[in-house]
Length: 348
Image (tube, rainbow, N blue to C red; front, side, top):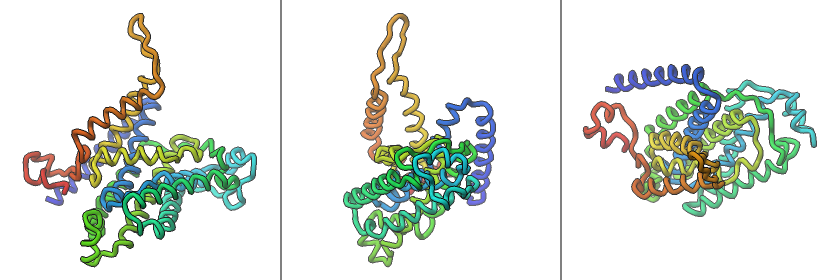
């Protein structure tokens, strides 16, 4: 059975690659941008779900880790002449001025620095719980943003970075999204994953069974931050320009919205919700603009798109209190026989 599942997984990845190949050739740039955003938010959502959903730690620091990854990746892939153009008020520090790396090493460096920041932050804050942990991680995220705003010779301050090389495409975004899912799923199915879930359900009981709470919380926090940094690097290269205001709490809120809508503790739900939220946010954009119906013109109301989107989300949350998937996961067994016991128990 396991061999069959592996074969089906490989076939599905090949099919995905074929779809990406033809999509990359036959779809306009706007739709390609939306698809890239879907994949990037999948990476961000899955990484945040590892911390909040599987380990049960209410962290709101993802925007800060994304900022670390975005700035690190951008500075490493930007040619020296573009750095000179960006840093016209105050020159960039000499070590960074001439460093230029390929995209993948730059993404890895961004993820590692984000993981390092999470390690430093985790020591004081992971001893907190619930709302206190949320406030502390949110505070550290804001501290990172303020630091980036005031380090003119490293991050270009409030001016941000422009003319970032656009390396992000469907291959990079979907490839790294698939890699993130494979790594997180493998981790969840390991002994560490079982420990994460035990901590989520009851910390006292988990500790009584010999689980080192702080160590496992730290691993979850650092791994989640690493993939947040990678996602931030992909986002920066896709957009082509970043500044500290991009990484406010609203960005963390969007990712939190995805994992709550999909289901805390469900990778499948996070992937589905990432596509729904990203596409719906763009699809409802017409509500902010004027609409012509025959001879009549309905004036657009700025912000109406988000109001309608929020109402729709409220309706979904009311009828699906545990999210679209709850804690269930997709499995080949459930696809073969949706009424079987395996289907009902596959995501638990």
